[in-house]
Image (cartoon, rainbow, N blue to C red; front, side, top):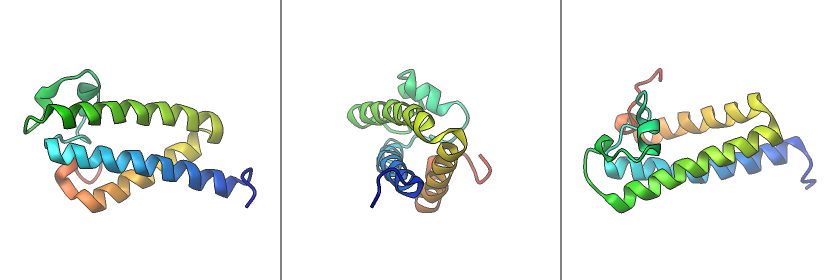
Length: 111
C-alpha cells in the first residue's frame, strides 16, 4: 500500500487517536470523571482532582498525560490532514466511545 494515499493516512491517524482516546475513556470511567461535560477536560488538564468521583491518583495522572498527548497528536494531525478531516476523525471516535461507555463520560447525547 502506498503510504502517501489519503485513505492510508486517514486510517493511520484514526487508529492512533482511537488507541489514545479509548484509554482516556477507560481511565475517566475508573476515576468517575464526566470528561465530556463542559469544562471538565480543562479542569483535568489543570490537574484539578476535584472532578473525580473517586480518588485514584495514578489513574488520574495517566489520564491527564494522555489528554495532553491527544492534543499533541491532534495538532500534528491538523498539519498533516487539515482541520476538517482531523475534526471528523475525532468526532467519529467520540461517537464510538459514547456507544461503548454510554453516559459514564458525561456530556449527554448532544455535547
